[in-house]
Image 1: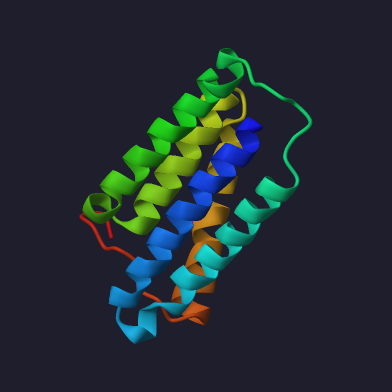
Image 2: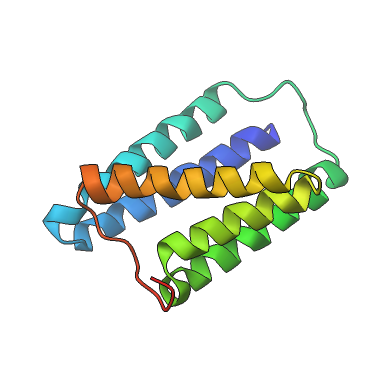
Length: 138
């Protein structure tokens, strides 16, 4: 079996597990997580049905430096979200992430991090009336 299909099966199982967990959410908060899980499930099924053309992946390709940095950064971001606060942590995460991969793009990193957090605030806080984790910085 192609590696993409194996990964797709694991993702489908994880999606099903997380969907099951949404039954423990309050009814007013389960819509958005379920929407994300539906999207994730559809993408997993598509990955299973339409795997990549490669039969095997090289070790270096699967565990590339950029992928490891992205994974570690995402874990740190989620871990500190409650402590620091969503907006401050999001600005800091996007800023450091872009700057980490494009050292000369400081202005681009600042503009994108502020634009991302501002857009997230408008869409989720203002339009959808959702609250974000508030930490020591907000």
